[in-house]
Image 1 (cartoon, rainbow over the protein chains, first blue to last red):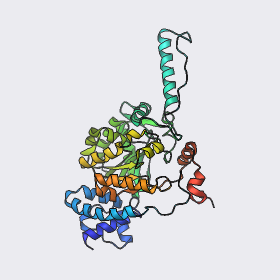
Image 2 (cartoon, helix red, strand yellow):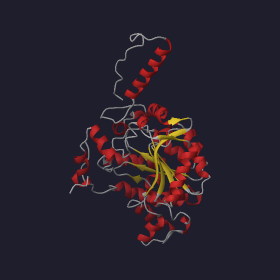
Image 3 (cartoon, rainbow over the protein chains, first blue to last red):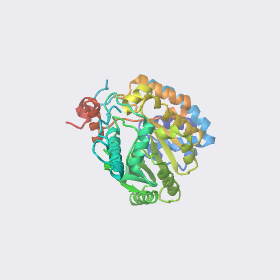
Image 4 (cartoon, rainbow over the protein chains, first blue to last red):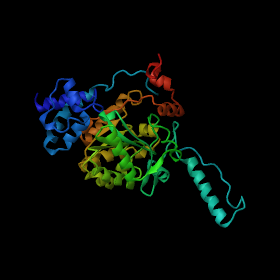
Length: 89
Length: 297
């Protein structure tokens, strides 16, 4: 899988579980190989790993490009789905 | 805050002079401060969060030490050692923390940065985790304590990553605070936004709407200073309408598109403190969470 596609898949998977599992576990559960560029970050939560990768100048541009695509989709949908109870007035 | 201090008798009225009068004035001043301190909010309450930060610091910071209620490890972030601090400068009605947020003078014990670091490192070692944080209250209160603690954590082998969870108010109010943490290698920040519009910010947190922009300023400052971080937001659709969520994400995207794409969207859970705060605010937790959401069968 190309790095661009892998990062996009990870950003999307973060919507399911971005904080409480390790990046390597999330990748393993969805049959994605941890990108070589994220080596050393496998034990961190995926969202944290991606944010740390973003601080790396070499990866920043690619992550920005992927983010633009993901953002459009993120804005187009409700994030959490149906929750019990109801909205407050 | 709308709570009024009421009318207190003067020292003259109670017939005291000199040292006695001074002590009585101090006692009355303290009582007035205790009565006017914002605790749980009702609809329409509002306060200056920077002022509340200062008031809270007087209760939870002392000579570089800070009040904590516990040191432990928990499963979030895949396992993390945690120091639970007392005191916050916001009063979100959906807040999950215990009542030490509302009554900081009644909870916790003071720990120096050395003692807190030792306890956090011990918890990390005991539970075999390499991440650490301080949580519960707002970690950026008691600046001296936090900076000393973070410096000490840098030297500890037990901790590889320190996650600083903040509401961004104090970072947004003073960029020099962000610069103070920018050089620390183990520090990672999670900024939690509470609203996408000033009116909603005031209604949910009790902090006046004019301070709405501070957490966004914090985000910009963190980015400008190359601090490693991500942004979270309470976008639970039962609390935040879709249009406001959109505005929040768009505002964040104006700062940086990656931050918006990597936004952690929080859901409100029925912790004990949340249920009580909601009820005090005037919401029915059963209607909010539903019987199913509260675990009823």
